[in-house]
Image 1 (cartoon, rainbow, N blue to C red):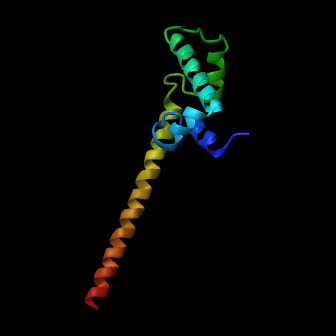
Image 2 (image 1 turned 45 degrees about the vertical axis):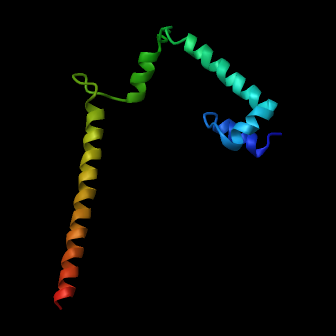
Length: 113
């Protein structure tokens, strides 16, 4: 079973120095984890230049997940969602501004009373 320092060392492999570094120097399990991590990083770096062809069914699957789109511009539905988000954010901003103005007006009314 792993101890709390082993679990912390596994979650924070980039942290060096202090208690974790001293733990890694003496813990065989953490040293093995670090070796596996370095080996995997080397293997992934070796694959960096390779290009894998996309499966033939990928285009259809992606289009099915996107849902119905305008044939003239397939991004139209996505653009409408982005516009709706911006309009909602503007509405929240306007409500915040109105609340701020009302608060300032109330404060001024209390000060003059």
